[in-house]
Every structure is written in C-alpha cells, then in structure tokens.
Image 1 (cartoon, helix red, strand yellow):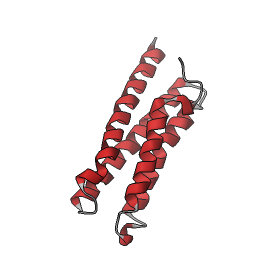
Image 2 (image 1 turned 90 degrees about the vertical axis):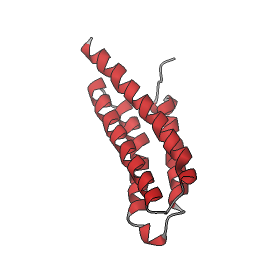
Image 3 (image 1 turned 45 degrees about the vertical axis):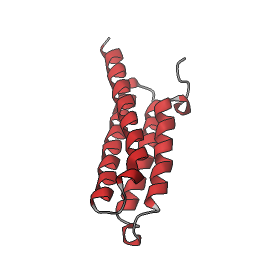
Image 4 (image 1 turned 180 degrees about the vertical axis):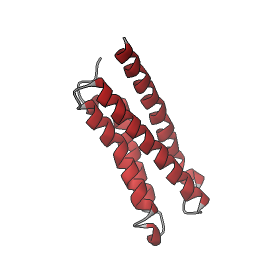
Length: 123
C-alpha cells in the first residue's frame, strides 16, 4: 500500500511519538534551561515530522528528498541534545532510552526513504 498522505507514513507517526516523548522529557529539565536547551530540543523534535510532512506535500521527489535530509539533520541534532542532557546530569540514561530508540528507528527509516527515492530519480 502506497502512503497517500504524510499521516499514513510510519516514519511520520514515529516522529510524532518522538515529539511527544521530547515534550515529556523537557519538563524534567531545570528551570534555567527553559529558554535554552529545552527550547532547542522542542524545535528539533517538531522539525522532524514537520519536514517529512512538508516534503511529502511537495510536487517533486527531489524536493521530498531535500526535506527528508533536513528531517534527518534535525533528528541528529535532537540526539546530540538528549545526550547532552545525560552528560549535564539533567536526565538519566533510562529517561532518554525510549527517545533515543525511537530516534534510531526514525534514522533508519529516513535513510531508507532517501536511498529509495534517490534510486527512483536516477532511473
């Protein structure tokens, strides 16, 4: 079955799950991080499904791939921020385990989508 809409894409659905998880996690951060790290984390988390959706809504596969790359970059940024939270002692590894697992899964899906769409463009 071919996805008709971005909401049908499993990668988008998992990205939305990650977004919800990140919003849950940032509530645990210290108050002084409200406008710094937590804001960056929320932005990166929102960017992942947003760029998948925007790319899916574009008229060309080349544009779609570009937005998937942006989404992939935001996912890497979020990973870095989650790991920074651990290093700074704001969150435990167990706190971020689910988010990091979702992120890894999303990364694999994005890589696969980019690869398959790139092959299709070359054909």
